[in-house]
Length: 188
Ligand SMILES: Nc1nc2c(ncn2[C@@H]2O[C@H](COP(=O)(O)OP(=O)(O)OP(=O)(O)O)[C@@H](O)[C@H]2O)c(=O)[nH]1
Ligand SMILES: [Mg+2]
Image 1 (cartoon, rainbow, N blue to C red):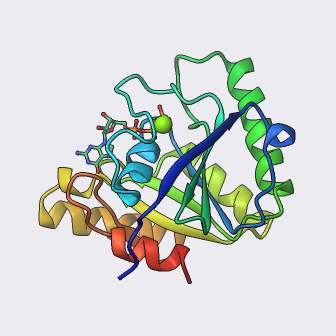
Image 2: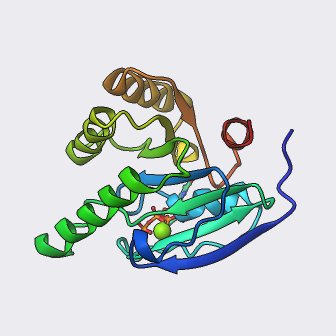
């Protein structure tokens, strides 16, 4: 099993051009606001507050870069679909995010996070189609698996898996479910 012995926050960048190059494989997190991106980073890195989490969606408005074991970079990207942000602001972030994903050379695959408690949303699907159109490799992670009972969780995983026609990793930042699978994907 892969053990994370070193986890660091590196930098917050407004956009691609401010992000330094590391010559390390990089994995951006994509998902709706509040899906659990920051919690995902904390759980992978065994740290409570490495990435800031909140009950106020839309808090992460910058690209935050983290390094694990001096070997892998995780990019926490601004969440999409936060209703309280103006349309203009959302579109600006969408452009920023698209530029980052298309031009950041170190990206090996993106990690699309879907909240297991909800159906796949329209903007999740739009993001998925955009990524597929651009032939960006994706792994799919269903977050907050602990919040559902066994049957509901199975149903939800089936639904996501069907919607995206792919394998889905069940994940919980609370229990650590799925952590090993994710780390294996990142470090091989
Ligand atoms: N039960 C449960 N709650 C979770 C889990 N992961 C995240 N949460 C909660 O969901 C809320 C949002 O989590 P964040 O990690 O801040 O989500 P985010 O995607 O980084 O949100 P933004 O940065 O605002 O886009 C917080 O209240 C977390 O405690 C999980 O695995 N299980
Ligand atoms: Mg966050």
